[in-house]
Length: 487
Image 1 (cartoon, rainbow, N blue to C red):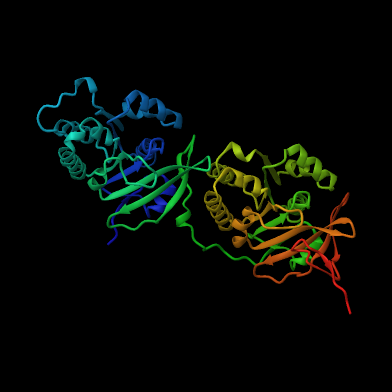
Image 2 (image 1 turned 60 degrees about the vertical axis):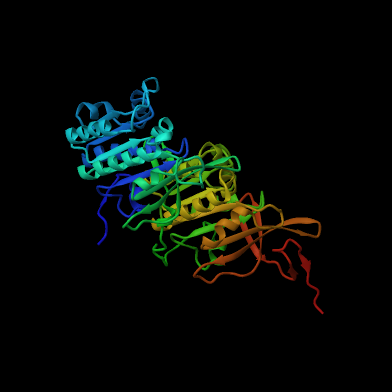
Protein backbone atom coordinates (compact mmCIF):
# COMPACT_ATOMS: atom_id res chain seq x y z
CA UNK A 1 0.00 0.00 0.00
CA UNK A 2 1.49 3.31 -1.10
CA UNK A 3 1.74 6.15 1.38
CA UNK A 4 -0.81 8.88 0.67
CA UNK A 5 0.74 12.13 -0.59
CA UNK A 6 -0.29 15.76 -0.40
CA UNK A 7 0.33 17.68 -3.62
CA UNK A 8 2.59 20.63 -2.86
CA UNK A 9 1.42 22.61 -5.90
CA UNK A 10 4.98 22.78 -7.22
CA UNK A 11 4.42 20.55 -10.26
CA UNK A 12 8.06 19.59 -10.76
CA UNK A 13 8.55 18.70 -7.09
CA UNK A 14 5.36 16.65 -7.10
CA UNK A 15 6.82 14.87 -10.13
CA UNK A 16 10.10 13.84 -8.50
CA UNK A 17 8.37 13.02 -5.19
CA UNK A 18 5.77 10.84 -6.91
CA UNK A 19 2.84 12.92 -5.78
CA UNK A 20 4.00 15.40 -3.13
CA UNK A 21 4.86 15.30 0.57
CA UNK A 22 3.69 12.35 2.70
CA UNK A 23 0.29 13.34 4.05
CA UNK A 24 0.15 14.19 7.74
CA UNK A 25 3.88 13.78 8.24
CA UNK A 26 6.77 16.17 8.86
CA UNK A 27 9.54 16.67 6.31
CA UNK A 28 12.95 18.13 7.11
CA UNK A 29 14.26 20.54 4.45
CA UNK A 30 17.99 21.08 5.02
CA UNK A 31 20.33 23.42 3.19
CA UNK A 32 23.19 25.86 3.57
CA UNK A 33 22.67 29.60 3.91
CA UNK A 34 21.04 30.98 0.76
CA UNK A 35 19.86 27.60 -0.54
CA UNK A 36 16.16 28.72 -0.58
CA UNK A 37 14.88 26.77 2.43
CA UNK A 38 12.55 29.55 3.58
CA UNK A 39 11.25 30.05 0.06
CA UNK A 40 10.61 26.32 -0.35
CA UNK A 41 8.46 26.35 2.79
CA UNK A 42 6.65 29.56 1.88
CA UNK A 43 5.88 28.25 -1.60
CA UNK A 44 4.42 25.12 -0.02
CA UNK A 45 2.00 27.30 1.97
CA UNK A 46 1.24 29.71 -0.88
CA UNK A 47 0.44 26.95 -3.38
CA UNK A 48 -1.76 25.26 -0.79
CA UNK A 49 -3.85 28.43 -0.49
CA UNK A 50 -3.86 29.36 -4.19
CA UNK A 51 -4.53 25.95 -5.69
CA UNK A 52 -6.26 23.90 -3.01
CA UNK A 53 -7.72 26.47 -0.56
CA UNK A 54 -5.75 24.84 2.27
CA UNK A 55 -4.84 27.23 5.13
CA UNK A 56 -1.32 27.25 6.51
CA UNK A 57 0.76 28.32 9.50
CA UNK A 58 4.26 29.78 9.13
CA UNK A 59 6.42 29.62 12.27
CA UNK A 60 9.62 31.64 12.36
CA UNK A 61 12.36 30.84 14.87
CA UNK A 62 14.85 33.19 13.28
CA UNK A 63 13.74 36.05 10.98
CA UNK A 64 11.37 38.86 11.83
CA UNK A 65 7.85 38.39 10.46
CA UNK A 66 7.87 41.80 8.74
CA UNK A 67 11.08 40.88 6.91
CA UNK A 68 9.66 37.54 5.77
CA UNK A 69 6.40 39.14 4.65
CA UNK A 70 8.26 41.80 2.69
CA UNK A 71 10.59 39.30 1.00
CA UNK A 72 7.79 36.97 -0.03
CA UNK A 73 5.68 39.73 -1.57
CA UNK A 74 8.18 39.88 -4.45
CA UNK A 75 6.63 36.62 -5.71
CA UNK A 76 3.18 38.23 -6.08
CA UNK A 77 1.70 36.25 -3.20
CA UNK A 78 -1.08 38.25 -1.56
CA UNK A 79 -0.06 37.38 1.97
CA UNK A 80 -1.78 40.43 3.51
CA UNK A 81 -5.16 39.32 2.18
CA UNK A 82 -4.55 35.72 3.19
CA UNK A 83 -3.73 36.86 6.72
CA UNK A 84 -6.94 38.88 6.92
CA UNK A 85 -8.90 35.87 5.71
CA UNK A 86 -7.19 33.64 8.28
CA UNK A 87 -5.68 31.41 5.59
CA UNK A 88 -2.06 32.35 6.36
CA UNK A 89 -1.05 32.64 10.02
CA UNK A 90 2.37 33.77 11.26
CA UNK A 91 3.68 32.54 14.61
CA UNK A 92 6.69 34.45 15.93
CA UNK A 93 8.80 32.02 17.97
CA UNK A 94 12.13 33.78 17.52
CA UNK A 95 14.04 33.85 20.83
CA UNK A 96 14.71 37.34 22.17
CA UNK A 97 18.33 37.22 23.24
CA UNK A 98 18.01 39.90 25.88
CA UNK A 99 15.32 37.85 27.64
CA UNK A 100 17.10 34.49 27.64
CA UNK A 101 17.79 33.27 31.15
CA UNK A 102 18.73 29.62 31.61
CA UNK A 103 16.52 28.48 34.50
CA UNK A 104 15.55 24.82 34.87
CA UNK A 105 15.07 22.40 32.00
CA UNK A 106 14.53 23.53 28.43
CA UNK A 107 10.79 23.42 27.67
CA UNK A 108 8.80 24.12 24.48
CA UNK A 109 5.40 23.42 26.00
CA UNK A 110 4.32 27.07 25.71
CA UNK A 111 5.31 27.11 22.05
CA UNK A 112 3.43 23.86 21.42
CA UNK A 113 0.29 25.40 22.88
CA UNK A 114 0.63 28.47 20.62
CA UNK A 115 1.25 26.28 17.59
CA UNK A 116 -1.71 24.03 18.35
CA UNK A 117 -4.04 27.02 18.80
CA UNK A 118 -2.87 28.58 15.51
CA UNK A 119 -3.41 25.32 13.62
CA UNK A 120 -6.83 24.68 15.15
CA UNK A 121 -8.05 28.26 14.73
CA UNK A 122 -7.09 28.47 11.05
CA UNK A 123 -7.87 24.79 10.38
CA UNK A 124 -4.41 24.66 8.83
CA UNK A 125 -3.52 21.64 6.76
CA UNK A 126 0.03 22.86 6.12
CA UNK A 127 2.65 24.04 8.61
CA UNK A 128 6.17 25.40 8.08
CA UNK A 129 8.66 25.82 10.91
CA UNK A 130 11.66 27.96 9.88
CA UNK A 131 14.42 27.51 11.07
CA UNK A 132 14.66 24.99 13.85
CA UNK A 133 18.45 25.27 14.19
CA UNK A 134 18.24 28.68 15.84
CA UNK A 135 17.03 26.97 19.02
CA UNK A 136 20.25 24.96 19.15
CA UNK A 137 22.25 28.15 18.73
CA UNK A 138 20.61 29.65 21.81
CA UNK A 139 20.53 26.54 24.02
CA UNK A 140 23.44 24.45 22.75
CA UNK A 141 24.06 22.99 26.18
CA UNK A 142 20.53 21.61 26.35
CA UNK A 143 20.87 19.37 23.27
CA UNK A 144 19.13 16.30 24.66
CA UNK A 145 16.30 18.33 26.13
CA UNK A 146 15.82 20.21 22.85
CA UNK A 147 15.66 16.97 20.91
CA UNK A 148 13.07 15.62 23.33
CA UNK A 149 10.97 18.77 23.04
CA UNK A 150 11.18 18.89 19.23
CA UNK A 151 9.98 15.31 19.02
CA UNK A 152 6.95 16.47 21.01
CA UNK A 153 6.43 19.27 18.47
CA UNK A 154 6.50 16.73 15.62
CA UNK A 155 4.04 14.51 17.49
CA UNK A 156 1.74 17.49 18.05
CA UNK A 157 1.72 18.27 14.32
CA UNK A 158 1.01 14.63 13.52
CA UNK A 159 -1.86 14.52 16.00
CA UNK A 160 -3.34 17.64 14.42
CA UNK A 161 -3.19 16.00 10.99
CA UNK A 162 -1.00 18.72 9.46
CA UNK A 163 1.50 18.07 6.69
CA UNK A 164 4.57 19.97 7.82
CA UNK A 165 7.99 21.22 6.80
CA UNK A 166 10.80 21.95 9.26
CA UNK A 167 13.84 23.75 7.82
CA UNK A 168 17.36 23.39 9.19
CA UNK A 169 20.76 24.76 8.23
CA UNK A 170 23.78 22.75 7.19
CA UNK A 171 27.39 23.92 6.99
CA UNK A 172 28.58 22.13 3.86
CA UNK A 173 26.90 21.04 0.66
CA UNK A 174 27.98 17.40 0.74
CA UNK A 175 28.72 16.79 4.43
CA UNK A 176 26.50 16.02 7.38
CA UNK A 177 22.80 16.64 6.83
CA UNK A 178 22.40 19.41 9.40
CA UNK A 179 24.60 21.68 11.48
CA UNK A 180 24.01 19.85 14.76
CA UNK A 181 23.29 16.35 13.40
CA UNK A 182 20.10 16.06 15.45
CA UNK A 183 17.31 17.53 13.32
CA UNK A 184 17.20 14.69 10.78
CA UNK A 185 16.16 12.25 13.50
CA UNK A 186 12.97 14.21 14.18
CA UNK A 187 11.35 13.39 10.85
CA UNK A 188 10.70 10.48 8.52
CA UNK A 189 11.44 12.53 5.41
CA UNK A 190 14.51 14.55 4.40
CA UNK A 191 14.92 16.92 1.45
CA UNK A 192 18.28 18.61 0.80
CA UNK A 193 18.72 21.91 -1.05
CA UNK A 194 22.18 22.78 -2.38
CA UNK A 195 23.75 25.93 -3.77
CA UNK A 196 27.14 24.71 -4.97
CA UNK A 197 29.92 27.00 -6.19
CA UNK A 198 32.02 25.24 -8.82
CA UNK A 199 34.50 26.93 -11.15
CA UNK A 200 33.09 30.34 -10.18
CA UNK A 201 29.57 29.23 -11.19
CA UNK A 202 26.62 28.58 -8.88
CA UNK A 203 24.38 25.57 -9.33
CA UNK A 204 21.24 24.96 -7.26
CA UNK A 205 19.96 21.40 -6.79
CA UNK A 206 17.32 19.57 -4.78
CA UNK A 207 17.54 15.98 -3.59
CA UNK A 208 14.97 13.84 -1.80
CA UNK A 209 17.25 11.95 0.55
CA UNK A 210 14.53 9.83 2.10
CA UNK A 211 10.76 9.43 2.17
CA UNK A 212 10.21 6.65 4.66
CA UNK A 213 7.64 4.19 3.34
CA UNK A 214 7.32 5.92 -0.02
CA UNK A 215 8.93 5.89 -3.44
CA UNK A 216 10.58 8.93 -4.99
CA UNK A 217 13.09 9.80 -7.70
CA UNK A 218 16.71 9.43 -6.63
CA UNK A 219 19.57 11.89 -7.08
CA UNK A 220 19.92 15.64 -7.49
CA UNK A 221 17.77 17.76 -9.77
CA UNK A 222 18.73 21.33 -10.70
CA UNK A 223 16.39 24.18 -9.85
CA UNK A 224 16.21 27.93 -10.21
CA UNK A 225 14.32 30.75 -8.53
CA UNK A 226 11.91 32.43 -10.90
CA UNK A 227 10.46 35.88 -10.04
CA UNK A 228 6.97 34.71 -10.99
CA UNK A 229 7.01 31.03 -10.06
CA UNK A 230 9.45 30.93 -7.10
CA UNK A 231 11.28 27.57 -7.06
CA UNK A 232 11.20 25.77 -10.41
CA UNK A 233 12.80 22.32 -10.57
CA UNK A 234 14.06 20.67 -13.75
CA UNK A 235 13.27 17.01 -12.97
CA UNK A 236 16.12 15.21 -14.77
CA UNK A 237 15.83 11.99 -12.78
CA UNK A 238 12.15 11.64 -13.65
CA UNK A 239 12.63 11.96 -17.41
CA UNK A 240 11.98 8.89 -19.51
CA UNK A 241 12.68 7.71 -23.04
CA UNK A 242 9.03 7.39 -24.03
CA UNK A 243 8.84 9.95 -26.82
CA UNK A 244 7.32 8.99 -30.15
CA UNK A 245 9.46 7.97 -33.14
CA UNK A 246 8.06 9.64 -36.25
CA UNK A 247 8.64 8.67 -39.87
CA UNK A 248 7.62 12.07 -41.24
CA UNK A 249 10.45 14.06 -42.80
CA UNK A 250 11.04 17.82 -42.76
CA UNK A 251 13.31 19.67 -45.15
CA UNK A 252 16.68 21.07 -44.17
CA UNK A 253 16.01 23.94 -46.57
CA UNK A 254 18.81 22.72 -48.87
CA UNK A 255 17.67 20.17 -51.52
CA UNK A 256 21.17 18.71 -51.90
CA UNK A 257 21.45 18.14 -48.13
CA UNK A 258 17.98 16.59 -48.06
CA UNK A 259 19.22 14.16 -50.67
CA UNK A 260 22.29 13.32 -48.55
CA UNK A 261 20.06 12.47 -45.57
CA UNK A 262 17.53 10.48 -47.60
CA UNK A 263 14.75 13.05 -47.80
CA UNK A 264 15.24 15.39 -44.86
CA UNK A 265 15.44 15.32 -41.07
CA UNK A 266 12.93 13.25 -39.14
CA UNK A 267 10.23 15.36 -37.53
CA UNK A 268 10.96 15.69 -33.81
CA UNK A 269 14.63 14.79 -34.24
CA UNK A 270 17.65 16.52 -32.67
CA UNK A 271 20.27 17.56 -35.21
CA UNK A 272 23.78 18.90 -34.60
CA UNK A 273 25.86 21.02 -36.98
CA UNK A 274 29.53 20.84 -35.98
CA UNK A 275 32.22 23.03 -37.47
CA UNK A 276 34.89 25.67 -36.98
CA UNK A 277 34.24 29.41 -37.02
CA UNK A 278 33.13 30.55 -40.46
CA UNK A 279 32.57 27.02 -41.77
CA UNK A 280 28.90 27.70 -42.56
CA UNK A 281 26.99 26.56 -39.46
CA UNK A 282 24.81 29.69 -39.25
CA UNK A 283 24.09 29.39 -42.99
CA UNK A 284 22.73 25.88 -42.47
CA UNK A 285 20.63 27.19 -39.59
CA UNK A 286 19.27 29.97 -41.84
CA UNK A 287 18.27 27.42 -44.47
CA UNK A 288 16.74 25.18 -41.79
CA UNK A 289 14.63 28.16 -40.73
CA UNK A 290 13.74 29.05 -44.32
CA UNK A 291 12.52 25.48 -44.76
CA UNK A 292 9.43 26.34 -42.71
CA UNK A 293 7.96 28.03 -45.79
CA UNK A 294 7.32 24.64 -47.39
CA UNK A 295 4.58 23.62 -44.95
CA UNK A 296 3.98 26.93 -43.13
CA UNK A 297 5.70 25.72 -39.97
CA UNK A 298 6.84 27.92 -37.11
CA UNK A 299 10.41 28.24 -35.90
CA UNK A 300 12.00 29.70 -32.77
CA UNK A 301 15.60 30.88 -33.15
CA UNK A 302 17.73 31.36 -30.04
CA UNK A 303 20.95 33.17 -30.95
CA UNK A 304 23.71 33.53 -28.34
CA UNK A 305 26.53 34.97 -30.45
CA UNK A 306 25.03 37.47 -32.92
CA UNK A 307 22.50 40.31 -32.73
CA UNK A 308 19.21 40.14 -34.58
CA UNK A 309 20.33 42.83 -37.04
CA UNK A 310 23.42 40.78 -37.93
CA UNK A 311 21.27 37.70 -38.42
CA UNK A 312 18.79 39.59 -40.63
CA UNK A 313 21.62 41.05 -42.72
CA UNK A 314 23.47 37.79 -43.19
CA UNK A 315 20.31 35.87 -44.05
CA UNK A 316 19.32 38.57 -46.57
CA UNK A 317 22.71 38.22 -48.24
CA UNK A 318 21.84 34.56 -48.79
CA UNK A 319 18.39 35.39 -50.17
CA UNK A 320 16.52 34.51 -46.96
CA UNK A 321 14.14 37.13 -45.53
CA UNK A 322 13.89 36.63 -41.75
CA UNK A 323 11.89 39.84 -41.29
CA UNK A 324 9.20 38.65 -43.67
CA UNK A 325 8.99 35.32 -41.87
CA UNK A 326 8.53 37.23 -38.61
CA UNK A 327 5.82 39.43 -40.13
CA UNK A 328 4.02 36.30 -41.30
CA UNK A 329 4.15 34.95 -37.73
CA UNK A 330 6.30 31.98 -38.76
CA UNK A 331 9.54 33.02 -37.04
CA UNK A 332 10.48 34.32 -33.61
CA UNK A 333 14.06 35.45 -32.98
CA UNK A 334 15.55 35.92 -29.51
CA UNK A 335 19.14 37.17 -29.23
CA UNK A 336 20.70 37.27 -25.76
CA UNK A 337 24.10 36.94 -24.14
CA UNK A 338 24.22 33.48 -22.54
CA UNK A 339 25.79 34.94 -19.38
CA UNK A 340 22.70 36.97 -18.46
CA UNK A 341 20.99 33.89 -16.99
CA UNK A 342 21.75 30.43 -15.69
CA UNK A 343 21.10 27.42 -17.91
CA UNK A 344 18.06 26.60 -15.78
CA UNK A 345 16.67 30.10 -16.38
CA UNK A 346 17.34 29.81 -20.11
CA UNK A 347 15.50 26.49 -20.14
CA UNK A 348 12.49 27.92 -18.34
CA UNK A 349 12.41 30.94 -20.66
CA UNK A 350 12.46 28.64 -23.69
CA UNK A 351 9.60 26.63 -22.21
CA UNK A 352 7.54 29.80 -21.81
CA UNK A 353 8.29 30.82 -25.42
CA UNK A 354 7.29 27.37 -26.65
CA UNK A 355 3.97 27.58 -24.78
CA UNK A 356 3.09 30.93 -26.31
CA UNK A 357 4.62 30.67 -29.81
CA UNK A 358 4.08 26.91 -30.36
CA UNK A 359 6.99 26.33 -32.77
CA UNK A 360 7.44 23.26 -34.96
CA UNK A 361 11.19 23.84 -35.07
CA UNK A 362 13.80 25.27 -32.71
CA UNK A 363 17.30 26.39 -33.69
CA UNK A 364 20.06 27.27 -31.22
CA UNK A 365 23.18 29.05 -32.45
CA UNK A 366 25.34 28.14 -30.66
CA UNK A 367 25.50 25.58 -27.88
CA UNK A 368 29.19 26.32 -27.43
CA UNK A 369 28.36 29.85 -26.28
CA UNK A 370 25.66 28.55 -23.97
CA UNK A 371 28.03 26.05 -22.37
CA UNK A 372 30.15 28.91 -20.97
CA UNK A 373 27.55 29.62 -18.29
CA UNK A 374 27.75 26.30 -16.49
CA UNK A 375 29.93 23.44 -15.33
CA UNK A 376 30.25 20.37 -17.55
CA UNK A 377 27.83 18.46 -15.34
CA UNK A 378 25.31 21.29 -15.38
CA UNK A 379 25.56 21.58 -19.15
CA UNK A 380 25.06 17.85 -19.67
CA UNK A 381 21.97 17.99 -17.48
CA UNK A 382 20.65 20.96 -19.46
CA UNK A 383 21.16 19.11 -22.75
CA UNK A 384 19.39 16.01 -21.45
CA UNK A 385 16.45 18.04 -20.16
CA UNK A 386 16.18 20.23 -23.23
CA UNK A 387 16.38 17.46 -25.83
CA UNK A 388 13.91 15.33 -23.86
CA UNK A 389 11.54 18.30 -23.74
CA UNK A 390 11.75 18.88 -27.51
CA UNK A 391 11.24 15.21 -28.32
CA UNK A 392 8.24 15.01 -26.02
CA UNK A 393 6.64 17.89 -27.94
CA UNK A 394 7.79 16.49 -31.32
CA UNK A 395 9.71 19.70 -32.11
CA UNK A 396 12.54 19.37 -34.63
CA UNK A 397 15.74 20.89 -33.25
CA UNK A 398 18.93 22.12 -34.89
CA UNK A 399 21.92 23.06 -32.73
CA UNK A 400 25.35 24.33 -33.72
CA UNK A 401 28.65 23.60 -32.00
CA UNK A 402 32.09 25.14 -32.57
CA UNK A 403 35.09 22.87 -33.00
CA UNK A 404 38.41 24.06 -31.51
CA UNK A 405 40.44 23.53 -34.68
CA UNK A 406 39.80 24.82 -38.20
CA UNK A 407 40.32 21.39 -39.67
CA UNK A 408 38.18 19.53 -37.15
CA UNK A 409 38.46 18.14 -33.66
CA UNK A 410 35.79 17.55 -31.05
CA UNK A 411 34.75 20.17 -28.52
CA UNK A 412 33.54 19.43 -25.00
CA UNK A 413 30.14 20.77 -26.07
CA UNK A 414 29.94 18.31 -28.95
CA UNK A 415 31.03 15.48 -26.70
CA UNK A 416 28.14 16.22 -24.33
CA UNK A 417 25.40 16.35 -26.95
CA UNK A 418 26.51 14.04 -29.76
CA UNK A 419 25.41 10.77 -28.05
CA UNK A 420 21.79 11.98 -27.83
CA UNK A 421 21.50 13.57 -31.27
CA UNK A 422 19.70 11.91 -34.17
CA UNK A 423 21.97 13.33 -36.84
CA UNK A 424 25.37 15.03 -36.96
CA UNK A 425 26.48 17.16 -39.91
CA UNK A 426 30.20 17.95 -40.03
CA UNK A 427 31.56 21.10 -41.67
CA UNK A 428 35.33 21.13 -42.12
CA UNK A 429 38.02 23.22 -43.76
CA UNK A 430 40.28 21.43 -46.25
CA UNK A 431 43.60 22.82 -47.45
CA UNK A 432 44.11 21.81 -51.07
CA UNK A 433 46.92 23.09 -53.27
CA UNK A 434 47.43 26.18 -51.11
CA UNK A 435 43.71 26.98 -51.05
CA UNK A 436 41.18 26.65 -48.23
CA UNK A 437 38.08 24.72 -49.21
CA UNK A 438 35.07 23.62 -47.19
CA UNK A 439 33.61 20.14 -46.86
CA UNK A 440 30.36 18.70 -45.57
CA UNK A 441 29.64 15.17 -44.41
CA UNK A 442 26.86 13.32 -42.62
CA UNK A 443 28.55 11.58 -39.71
CA UNK A 444 25.37 10.09 -38.27
CA UNK A 445 21.70 9.72 -39.22
CA UNK A 446 19.87 7.59 -36.69
CA UNK A 447 17.30 5.22 -38.18
CA UNK A 448 17.97 6.17 -41.77
CA UNK A 449 20.41 5.56 -44.58
CA UNK A 450 22.50 8.54 -45.63
CA UNK A 451 25.30 9.63 -47.93
CA UNK A 452 28.69 8.54 -46.58
CA UNK A 453 30.76 10.69 -48.92
CA UNK A 454 32.62 13.88 -47.99
CA UNK A 455 31.37 16.55 -50.34
CA UNK A 456 32.58 19.97 -51.37
CA UNK A 457 30.70 22.78 -49.66
CA UNK A 458 30.83 26.42 -50.67
CA UNK A 459 29.14 29.67 -49.73
CA UNK A 460 28.16 32.09 -52.49
CA UNK A 461 25.74 34.97 -52.97
CA UNK A 462 23.14 32.29 -53.64
CA UNK A 463 23.75 30.70 -50.25
CA UNK A 464 24.87 27.12 -49.59
CA UNK A 465 26.09 24.97 -52.44
CA UNK A 466 26.92 21.29 -52.05
CA UNK A 467 29.04 19.81 -54.82
CA UNK A 468 30.59 16.49 -55.67
CA UNK A 469 32.60 14.38 -53.26
CA UNK A 470 36.34 14.79 -52.79
CA UNK A 471 37.80 12.14 -55.08
CA UNK A 472 41.28 10.71 -54.61
CA UNK A 473 41.79 12.33 -51.20
CA UNK A 474 41.90 10.80 -47.71
CA UNK A 475 42.37 12.18 -44.21
CA UNK A 476 39.90 15.08 -44.54
CA UNK A 477 38.10 14.35 -41.27
CA UNK A 478 41.38 14.08 -39.34
CA UNK A 479 42.60 17.42 -40.68
CA UNK A 480 45.40 15.83 -42.73
CA UNK A 481 44.15 15.53 -46.33
CA UNK A 482 46.41 13.51 -48.60
CA UNK A 483 46.22 12.69 -52.28
CA UNK A 484 45.82 9.00 -52.96
CA UNK A 485 48.27 7.83 -55.58
CA UNK A 486 46.90 5.15 -57.85
CA UNK A 487 49.35 2.55 -59.08
